[in-house]
Length: 371
Ligand code: UD1
Ligand code: BG6
Image 1 (cartoon, rainbow, N blue to C red):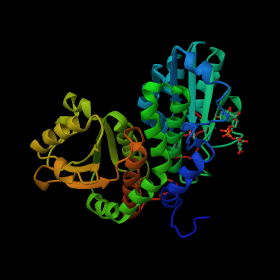
Image 2: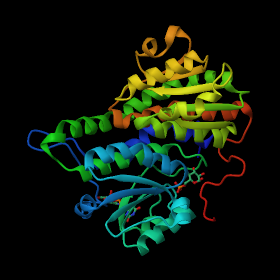
Image 3: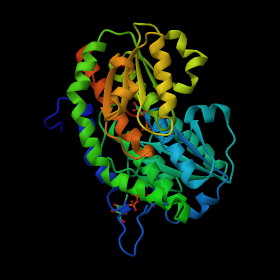
Image 4: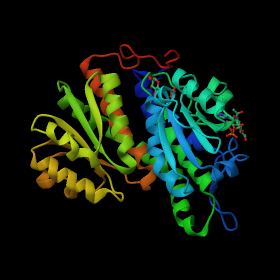
């Protein structure tokens, strides 16, 4: 049931404040006079010790689920101190890459049915790793075959392009990072800031959804373009990949997410006055580096669309020469949850304006159960 919406993708984008609330329900403890703020993940609590002791955590997934894991990687590394590596499921299987008994392998899948992810799971089980699932579908094969895991509880997702599952996956993995990290005096302030940020996140997502009309106007400007580049780094490298994936899969426009640190190693050659480029430059430890990326793109007359924290338009946009998307600022590791929303809206409106099928893009399936 689409309710007041025209498409499932539109409905699923707009219901993210609610889906995120459901994802966190019963899992965050607000704390109080004698109780610390904390996280309780029923599905992981008996396995936390093993995960903390593992030699590394390896995230495995496909498509949007892979991108969600990439968004959560930095905070898991920071809080757990355990090395975190990334594997696209098909590539791990193709290479028969190393997976050991001392590894924790985390399988991220909305459907819990993706063939490549499932095959990677079978491979990791054979190799003796602890296998953890992050899934949306209770009873799915990946949920059943993992040793333990967390359901993201985002509700049924119908649009082929994943939206609300992406943001819920990131939130669950941030909670997993908090759970694995445990309570130490040295990280207490950071943990509390993240937990407060999680409580506040649905409200911030509701605010960023107000950019709907602005994103429609931007889509009108981009309707006839051949290509769109998206530059991000740090916490928002994943946002660049996921934003580009949305545009490509539904609007059927070539789009590429680029790690801004790689700009000079190739992508800069593409920059001219015609190619539109989104640069994600919200406030975090990489902000000044992104400011310098913007200056360099500007010097080559790049057509810039800059996503920045509210109030930062003047500091990111040299001489008012670019279009700016201002978003609410949240704790740095949660910023990808906010930043993806305008790009989801952009992809949605681009698709409608270009006259393509939003909920069932050509050639794609919601769940890829064959190889
Ligand atoms: C569980 C209940 C929830 C109830 C809550 C009350 C289910 C599905 N969930 O939620 O209805 O309100 O207790 O405390 O009954 N798992 C995997 N792989 C996965 C995902 C999950 O093995 O990919 C396992 C978990 O380790 C756990 C079980 O499935 O044993 C349920 O996981 P989850 O729903 O995340 O647990 P709770 O949040 O505790
Ligand atoms: C398909 C879907 O390609 O599978 C994507 O169209 C999804 O939206 C990908 O990200 C992975 O699916 P899952 O269910 O394993 O997260």
